[in-house]
Amino acid sequence: MALRTRVLPVALVAGLVATGAAGCGSSGKKVPVPGSAGGTAAGVAQAGTGGAGDSKAKDPQSALSEGLVALGKQQALDVVVKLAASPDDLVALDKSSGTDKPLTADQAKLFTGGDFELISKSTNGAAIADAKGAVNTAFLVHTDGSPLFEVRTIGGTALYARADVDKILTLSKTPRSKIDQQLASVPPQYAFVKDAANGKWLKVDIAALKGLTSQLGGAAIPSVDPTQAAAISGALVDALKKDVGATRGADSDKGDHLVLTTNSRALFTDVVSTFSKVVPGGAAALSSLKPQSAPDKTITLDAYLKGGTLSEVSLELTQFVSPADMAKLGGRKLPVDMVFKGQAPDVTAPTEATTVDVQGLLAGVLGGIKGGSGGTSAPGATAAPLPTSHATP
Image 1 (tube, rainbow, N blue to C red):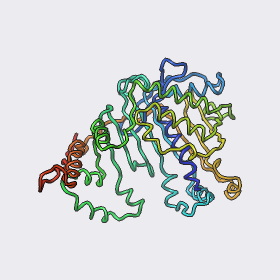
Image 2: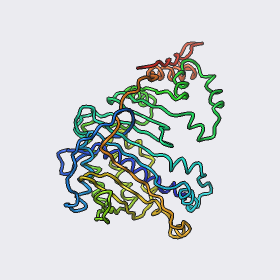
Image 3: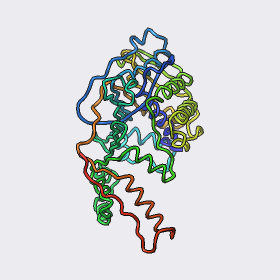
Image 4: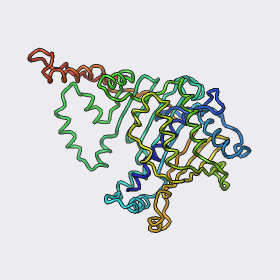
């Protein structure tokens, strides 16, 4: 099985933990809170302090738990996940896993030259965990330092999305002319599709989007009510305390160094179970993830704390390579670094976006189904026209 397939479940758990960490705070429990993610825009704000003090004065397990909680006591959190390896190392590691379709050099450059970014920013001056839902979020995928894809949620009511379609076409070696030919036949009612293909922002009402999903019989969109953040965080921290052991590592200029040890399958199982039980819609969204899909392996991670707050976690992916394959790698390494910063760009609504009328879109889709099914529509009846899109400041 390819290295990328074996590591994917573990990478997903890292993302869930990062998402949960963004809302850490006080829940009234002995160990409190994680909860949101996302971002970009203008203006960098200094987060609140809220650190746990000198973590070196505490035992490693307590330092880890309190370092996680301290993340949510800030007004902002910027989490960046990146492969800290060269393209050549990534190609060599992928080939060692026995895949018959190893990564190409260009694909490897895409992975190693980019990152995932999650930003949470309180909008009322309170710490993230105490903001009572007043948190804007953003999620970005970067390549070569620029956003390839970006999603923002503003005020918990609006979702904005944009993709650099031209760059995606270049990376996939797809000629723009092929897309333009398809867009030429798109009717005016689907104008937002053309705008999206031209790299413009789209705006969707979150409540309407949930309604559309429900009416079409799809799985509920996972969402977190601010009052549920404490339960999520408490359960997540409990899972980490249960599955992850911490000892002190060698001195480092990165901060207080902790070496974390865990069984990757046990951690995967408990973290996914936490989100499935506590997040509304989480069970359906994560139903395809099976415990057996994660490697049953004891792994170590390096964690660093500054001022008592978790600042960095690094996972060496070569731990998932067999001893026989390791001998072929000549000492190559493939660390995945997750960096937590208490400063973050403001997450604001774009100055201009094309609004997608979700309710009108639903009416058009359902009208088309009814009209084409020979049901109750009158002879010659046509589906209700899909809504036209419009720019929204």
